[in-house]
Amino acid sequence: MDSATLLPITIMRGQTFVEITLHLGNKSFQFYIYLIYSLGPADIVFEAGGKLYLYSLSLQQMKEIKVTLINDHVALKPTMVFTEKYIQHAAIGPDGNRALMEARGEIFSIPAENGFIKNLTRSSASAERYPAWSPDGKTVAYWSDQSGEYELWTMEPGKESSAKKITSYGPGFRYNLFWSPDNKKLAFIDKAMKIMVYDFNTNKTIQVDKGLRMSHGNLESFKCSWSSDSRWLSFSSDLENYHNSIRIYDYTDNKLHQVTSGFYSCANPVFDPDGKYLYVFTDQSYQPNYSNIDNTFIYANSTQVAAIALSKTTPSLLYAKNDEVGIKKDDEKQKADSLKKV
Image 1 (spheres, helix red, strand yellow):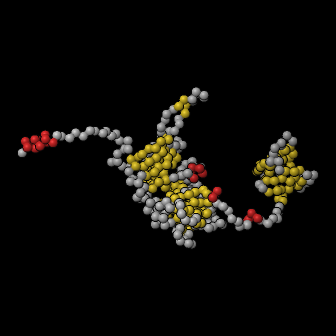
Image 2 (cartoon, one colour; image 1 turned 90 degrees about the vertical axis):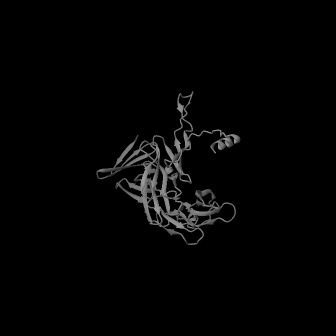
Image 3 (cartoon, helix red, strand yellow; image 1 turned 180 degrees about the horizontal axis):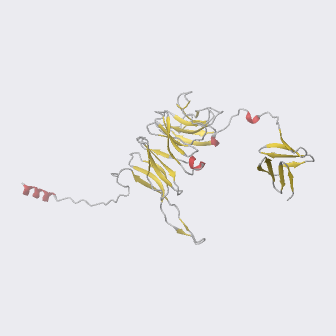
């Protein structure tokens, strides 16, 4: 490999790339240029970080080359865009007559069968995400970066100019919103893996829990479930053993309870409407199949639905039952027995 050392820059010429080391005092900074350089009789021109630089061999100095492109900015002009291919998140209305859909940074109200499609936000200069309809149908909540960062906004879908910013969290990204049945609380998770609840009565946000290793995919698919009385919030969270456990947060007493041990991985808890059971997915059905090809076992379809009784007095759904044949006494014998007693 040919090399040439130029202070304060060292350039290594290879077949596929150029390695440049920039010496500043006692520190050196390395970066790579992939076949985007040209060596002339007096200068070297190269690209780094999306910019062009000119290095003088005689002066051993580097300067940026300012590039100005003159065009008519067609791509920046207002234009009409069909959004049906950009739908990302949707939420069904409480009565099922309409649904909210996020597409290209706008929130749309779409009828189930009859009616018109309405753009609720109409904000091309900002992005609105993760819409959620309140259980009473009066309020739509969503995230918007209209203020510069993603904050919680609400609006009344049937009232024009009703949108208002609720929070001032600052930098960060937040995900799906989950209304409580009493329309007074919203649960969500942010990019820092913090599970939060916003209370409309107190205008305060509390942290319920925090994940350990949740990437964007885990955060995007995060789900939680409110109990019918809006007191309890259930969700799954990861553990040190890389399994997920089911947890229930008591909003009234501000206490967090872990309801599965984590020996088996569990996820996606859902309260039943009567508040008697908590339904979960659990990975604890092991029926190994042996492979003759690679001499290994596989455990297919290990995820099953399970039910957790939420009270000691609530019977298990798997409680053993036994049907019996009822035996009725002969009517005449019953009459004779009654006469003897008289």
